[in-house]
Length: 404
Ligand code: ADP
Ligand code: ASP
Ligand code: MG
Image (spheres, rainbow, N blue to C red):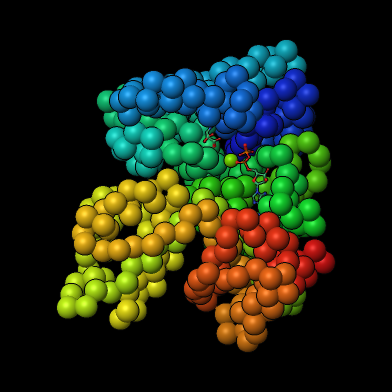
């Protein structure tokens, strides 16, 4: 049996028109001889009736007091509604399908409600339905504890459901259908010239996803890479083949020929830069600062430690608490809210001279101050004011000629 996983994101399922496209993709691949497992997200985006954010709004108004286990039961409803609605459209089109929740599909997780990790998958039930010729629709984003309690895999987790099922079922390919034409050189909502990348390595896209390119969840890419299953990210609304994610030798040869230094540009907004100066007579500043952040479970990033102090970033939502904690420790921190981390990413930039020079040129030409920077062998990060972020993305995109 040749198995294909097709995952459809929220906007691909939110209207009758969108669902018609979904049916077209499912039918085409059944006609191509595949046994199809469909993974669905909740329908629509924030504001739409059954979207995950809308469900969350139900409890936010009550101060978000719902325990984590019950919160996951609420969140899981979005995918169940979406799966049943799709099943009914499939039935109307003469395609026999069955809906399985994450738990029914055999996805077992740990008990970290809201952020559960998949421990194992028992795919026997899915396989038996596939053998009987049915399309199996699995509610994405969900799993179950061994006790049978519903868990969710973290925001954007339907992608992870898709690749994890792909690995467990030894699928030939996992297709991620969304509202853009594949993985692009930058977020098309900000950079209009962003161009779809026909082929990328797992490492490149995993890196872009970790740096904020929301088109696919980084965990989903890691799983596909470990299982060596190719991924295709493509639009629900066209027949374009989108972006193939693979580590095949042909792909590596192709990249060598093209000599691609920079693959894409990603961004994360809502960041606060915190600076803490060393205090005369105290040699524990560095230790105290980072231990106190860890104790209060505040995640830190972009860390620069020098003998004169420490500069690092936290999410805006944690900034107030971070500053209070530092003041309680006897420090006098300063904080700049509403910053954004812009990342220039490319497996081919390693050892290539001049990449940082071009970044500085691009930003200086537009009068955008760099507040901080850091680099690894595949990424250069700069911190800028959020108000400068869109302009920074566009100028870097142009400087590295990513529209070509
Ligand atoms: P879905 O509901 O299909 O999972 P998401 O909203 O999670 O959709 O992801 C798709 C969105 O990701 C696109 O609409 C696009 O704005 C955004 N995005 C951010 N960076 C990129 C990128 N580099 N390439 C493509 N899309 C991107
Ligand atoms: N519906 C979930 C979310 O909005 C999971 C997903 O879409 O992947 O986070
Ligand atoms: Mg998504």
